[in-house]
Image (cartoon, rainbow, N blue to C red; front, side):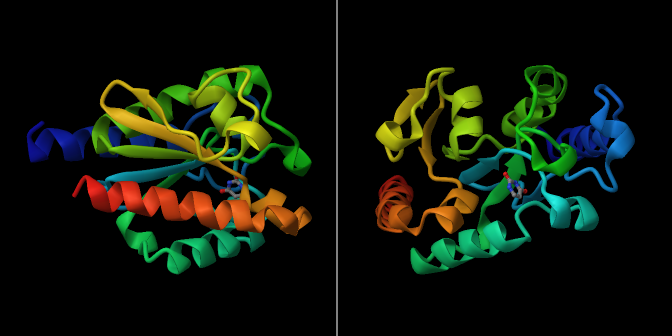
Length: 190
Ligand code: URA
């Protein structure tokens, strides 16, 4: 795709997303949390939905869970600015409840277009909700985290959601080993 066309598609997408009222969350958000990072990233992370701090700032993964994610990225030597980070939902659900299927359906095309524009090699689902949407509906995070799924031009995997690690630190070893595998795969295809 030509640079100009790419830039126009990014601007159109972001503008549409920022003004979106395709579901009721458009009325309650402070900010649309579109996504952040490198638009030429080889690696993309997809979380569930913005929380309170993300809604306030407009940036994904900046709260406690985000800070923990940053620590894992640092531990495996992946600069945050080299990856792209987005969520299934661009607006915060009230009281951080799970996204409703209708909200995901209304929002998923934004993520699809982000993936088409970035064309990452690897997509990492942060937690069960993203994995159930992007990998398979019956995804079991406790059994299938760290497993690779090949889909067309990219590989998909899922890791525990950093908020789940805050609640259950026993998963942290698994998280570190999954993140190491992601870094290895990234390095092996350079
Ligand atoms: N949890 C998510 O799934 N996404 C965010 O952006 C923040 C917390």
